[in-house]
Image 1 (cartoon, one colour):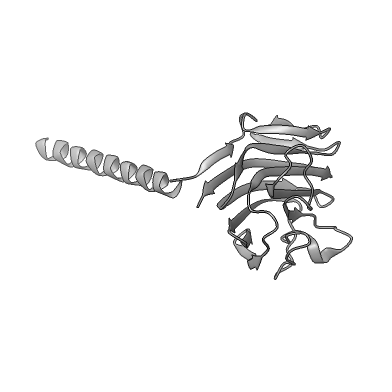
Image 2 (cartoon, rainbow, N blue to C red):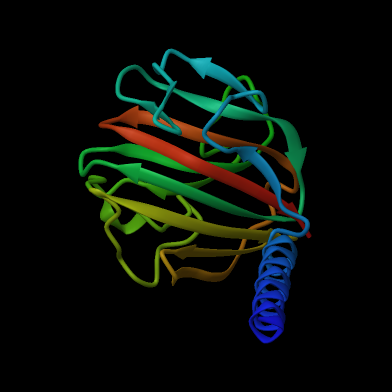
Length: 198
């Protein structure tokens, strides 16, 4: 009986240690990341335009109108992780370093595009509009996707679902600004957006 008690106690200790290690590793993986959207509220965002943004099933989505969710804070050098779902007709994007939070455009910020059916496909999904064409042309429609975007000084890297579409593109027009999530057409959903200053 004592032997079984000792074995049980040992197994409980191992389980607690493993759980603690996993929690610690998860905490380290998220170290420095600031969650701007986690599926529950839009407290970190201001809305411009008339897009019908609303939270549904842990994602913010729009399917009518035209507009942006604009971060309340500005960022200079940073990484973004954004999880999004779009249909094949969607026109969206993650805008960074937007200098005018009341009027977001590809001229006063950088547009990391989500636009599978863009008439000029050279700046479609995975591109930074008017700055860098994607090294690999990928489609985002009909599935959950993850953008990982890095802006450090004049250099930009874009990774879509683990594939690098932009590697070290350079442009120095915009040094700092807001982040904006775009709705222009189709169905667009974002379920997690995080930023990490670097």
